[in-house]
Length: 434
Image 1 (cartoon, helix red, strand yellow):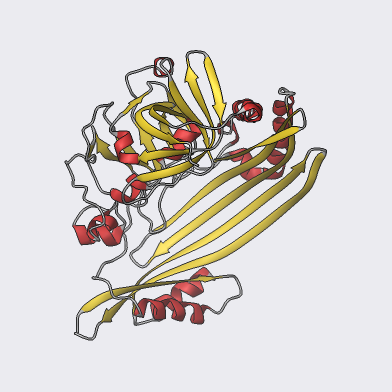
Image 2 (cartoon, rainbow, N blue to C red):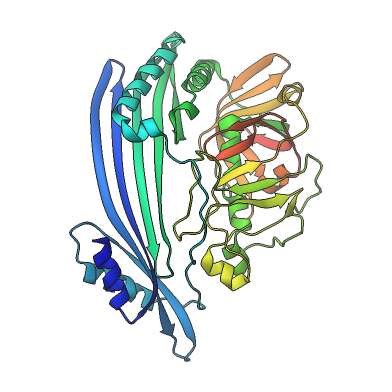
């Protein structure tokens, strides 16, 4: 069918360029309850993504470029689907641009062999491992768990000569722990996404979230606070992947005048009083959740230096916006990588602070960086005393926070984030609310 689609695309005079992605996936799922396995499922999918460019002329005679797409399943009408994509492209009028040319692709580790070859057994073993790890913490019990494993193959071709294939594995786990005391009960929900089993670290996750569940039983209400706030591990990774830096450093945002960031200029509007920020947009990170050998357009993966010592070093851009800005295309952003700081995590944690351990959800305004996010669990820390609280909002601005932060020397890997395990932000607000 792939060849039939290619022939149909080549036969269309209105199509000036095209790309075609053939995607096959196998997904295995295991659903577990306290007493054992509830069900298992295996799902296979195969589909084709067609993307076309066509020349368009507006009412004033200005020549532009339209882009449209469609998705085909195995038995779909090829002619109709390609026609639909071309019709959609005819409704769009952008400045002219092209598609990527062939380029050397890096070898980025994306797939775990055992997970690819025998996912059902892998999931069963993970279920067994998770139960064993949770059993080490008798103060909690496992009520349910879901395990998902996917093997994904993408074969991409385009009219410029790209012909590339990549294979990936993905793992997604979520489970619920319950802690009970004197008739009260709380739950701790855990979700982890990785590409290979060894990066799941079920021992650490089980221990931390067992403690979180127990602490939630005794957690009090928050109080208004302004001062040092610590984020660690997954919570720090969530903060750094809040799409603020991704948007403001993008060529699309630059072209649309949605960002004021300029190459060689500081990204902060406030004075930097913390450690300097050096950050990469990294699609070459081995087994990174957002890594790839090539992106949806076929652009090779890069480890792109994005911010050097608080100043913008590069924009990220797809082929379209790279041409508009006369810069080299970089492809999709990928994973966030941050350089180490000079201070040990132990020293960063030694002075009083608030630690936000779990957000209900961290989201920030991608244009301004402002946020007010609910705290699922936090701690007021003074020496060895950790007083848990739940509720309230962490309030601040991502860019201002990054101008006043101290990074740990220790590094960690958390799926879509590689960098310091601990960050101590100098001035954030916890609002207790009403």
